[in-house]
Length: 373
Image 1 (tube, helix red, strand yellow):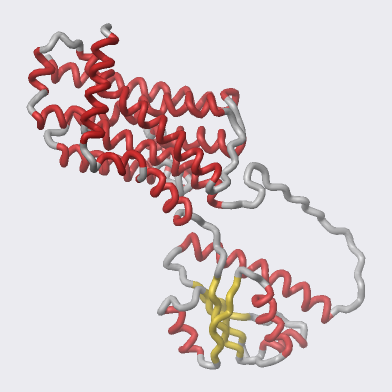
Image 2 (cartoon, helix red, strand yellow):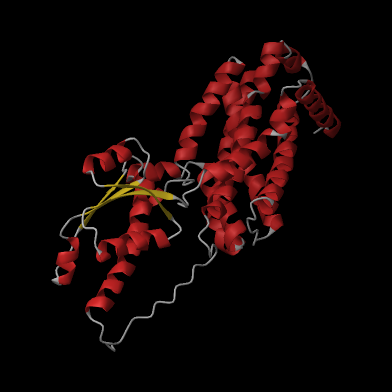
């Protein structure tokens, strides 16, 4: 193996990469902008639920319901009306998130010690968000029921209780950013390495220099190393940059080992570089390579567990996730960031990722050699 030859190939690749002024912002600025945008946009935290009220009772008890929602900072009551159609129209126009209707017999039923119902309408077009809103509403109504009980039965009753002392590990405040931002770091590494590696061989074909490389005494594996090493270096630089940005900008805790983070990233790059090389060998133009890359990225994202739990997917789809390198790397990077776990816990994912990466990279190299023959 000629390291001098590989070094010159790496040097040539860097010169070609940075010669194009359009590539510079993509390599340096784009990852930070994407992390910043995704870090704020991709979240399941519900901080402001707009509410509209229809109060047909106008009693002390109905005002207690309204006050209970007013006292909760999550809810923002912006609309009151006496007309049911007006309330439903606001919900239809998405000017409110939740519509609450209190019937005229609400107070009478409570005073008679009967169950008094109130109608709650919420926008179910976004089912996940609707489920969270309903959970918040239920917690407010549970506390309200206790207040009604104290008024109806003012006597102090002593009885045994279950005291649940709940502690949330790894993400005590349940911030969704702590869950999503490490995943965004992994996804950005995958996007950039796939995009640039998938263009590596195509550029030589379109520039007409591929034939010249074939007739040179350069061995095929030296050419592959010369093509992939620059993107490995770029991937590590970007990983360090976005990790620092995630820690100091988003305040994401890094509880685990930094060397293990570098090791797992190296193993992950085997898969992404292998897939990128494979796409590069089967494509005829840069446009075709780019379209194939994005065709792969969307299923990889959807089947990674980045947003949607894998356990809730159909069984057949769950089997497909085992072929997705991003799925393993997300478990690893979130374990390192949030849990601070090491190889003793993450070895199944590291082993699976290494085996998958070696198979993919070896397949890409084999196909590349066939193109050189």
